[in-house]
Image (cartoon, rainbow, N blue to C red; front, side, top):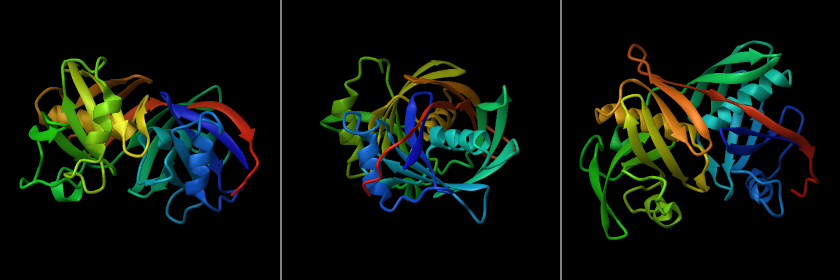
Length: 279
């Protein structure tokens, strides 16, 4: 099986061109390739497939083999792969995902994609659709008890459910302890991605993320979008902000006219390779 390893600000995946390759058991392959000792090492597996409704389709699997609906950093790399490897020959493309068709604008440098702006669609704020258990229609700065401590969180879905929690020190957070407790909390029926966020100024926030099915990752695109949305809703930033993560920074803008979230960030190829297909 031929593959390409790529990352969006450190959020790395193994990409397989299913225009040419067949992956019979993607859940098992995801677990195999993600292992950083016995496999390639990644946050998961992304399949790039033909689509009847878009230029290509993206199927994303977490490192535990579970399937995700959307990946903001991953879709930028899908766009880069599609252009750089000749699946498309235009700089405005569409990609079908489990959370709908997304539209992307590509910036080209030396014949290759360097930056990608993704229209991530409108955020979902209705509690029942995220989903999160709540008596309120929207969950904004609401209290939640986790491991005996009270936190306040805002719930947003960008195709994946997110809980955004504000704190003064994200660097010192023992995320490997609290992350799983949020992920599997009874209030989140489909589990949840949790962003622990420090507001730096009206245009900048810092974020660490615990992703359901993957644990802590260096970056999360949908999480960055959800974080920017929550910051605006809580009156902490404007409609456009930079979200700083351990792997790098993306710029998020909540367009006032369309109501859609626009995310701009890099997409980077690491290497091509070939492995024995055991599945």
